[in-house]
Image (cartoon, rainbow, N blue to C red):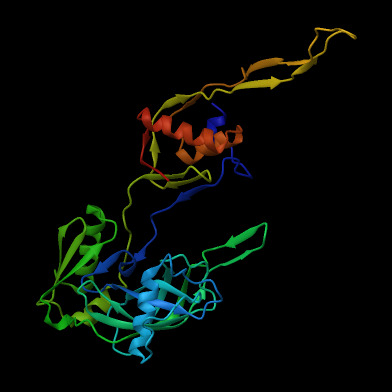
Length: 370
């Protein structure tokens, strides 16, 4: 049985195999979200100017011309009736996230993305752009030079593009103008939302919080929510959260195998188990060779014709040395994979074997394919 499949490989032949251990203690702040402590998405429509002829073609993007004309009119420049066709302007969508508890005057990062046929935003400057939230209100105003995330170059016969030159960012490019009111002191209860809902983890969080304060202020509502009663808490809501978010617990994780079929990467959870099974992996190779040859007529032949005739040879090879491996419950999945690697099983074959073992009911874990 291949020495119980406990052959360890110096080099993993089937891509990368990682074994994840979920037994580490983590802070509550790393596995839960606190009710009310979240960001808000902002979006706006603006113009980037100062481009080196890489802006929108205004005949194909009439909205850019309209926005530029409207901007100049607000600045006191009348362009009505003029042949206004610049190539250094691009229409963009500006996105940002308003962090929780952001105050008026603080600055946030923004992302700028072209929506027309502009080919490059390098060297451009975003003109003052209001950013709206889902309620339609303006919460920030963005402006500044754009840092493009790529470049493009072209000549008469070739071109090259690296990254995405039609998008960029402006660090600290927006200033908060409106605050989102939120007061912890007015809340009678708070809710902690587990990012990975689980009954066992929720029970451990409840027990850890109640043990830390010596009284039952935490209560499980469902596998993903723990309620904190502010009325019986010995501290204010802000101080209470500051204390409980550093409590350490051991989260419970489902047995899971994540497979990236493109790169051949396999990530195993620590609780993955296998049952007794047998596996054989075939090795069939079919080789087809084409060696056409030329047929010519005899010398001085009047009716002869030179033609090309096909000559095909097909070879079928099977590796009869492949053996059947029998695996019992005492062998872990990581040992199984290491043993298959030692036998020269490639990444695609390894993934197919894991799928087959799962289909046979011998692999007790969730299989996630990417």
